[in-house]
Length: 329
Image 1: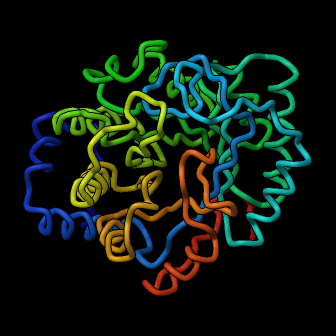
Image 2 (image 1 turned 30 degrees about the horizontal axis):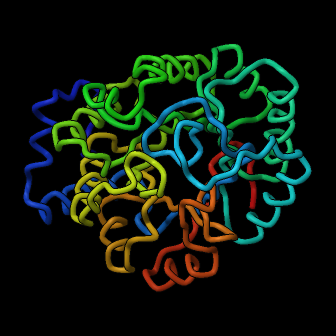
């Protein structure tokens, strides 16, 4: 009998998972993963910064915050045809999900949002899963994105509710949950996870996953990010995250949310082949790849398409096709 889907996890239960011996935890997570997912498939995704820098939020980890003194220069919203050119190249390189990110605090009903809707329509027409991360949005705006063909919306909770104010003061934890609730009034799938390595305690990591695992339904995607330390940000000198911490985080997320896609996201450039293999064994089944060795901006490195194809081939893994209705590659 398959592992049941639960949304009634207690904090004590979640915290206890973090205390399990690592190899026992990975074995348990791998078993759950194989009950609900193909173990030989990994989705290849690509991030595109469609509007870079100048964000009014003060997120302590972010190179795009106007409060932080990074080398990222503000750039205006990209033209839709430029985004479509990037999307076509990404598709030719085996990417099946394109995530478009704008350094906005919130979505505003204006000509720029209309341009984003055009981008969503165009990328959707190419047969790719379309994801956006644009900041906070209302239920009406979420519906407009859904009508344009958006498949997923990323809105991370980042960390625990208890630790959140240490990292961000310009919006609240509830603001993030409200945006997720607005998305749930539509058919758009939810992508929500967090970042480890920001000085949080183990209890904070458990609390963050408890928040996600008690949402009903669970987020369809749960990205696990390792802090990319960017010069000029408050977290530039944070300690490195041991690979065992990352593997443990992925394994616990997989056990708590069996049907969700756990995404090995930022920080993968710090990992060797064996490290990544252990993450896939623990339940990760998605990576972000790139054409210019960057995630969203030059401040955050990312593996390129050719090296990722070689990585997956060496591990006997194959790229997953898109799951959006009617999408073909």
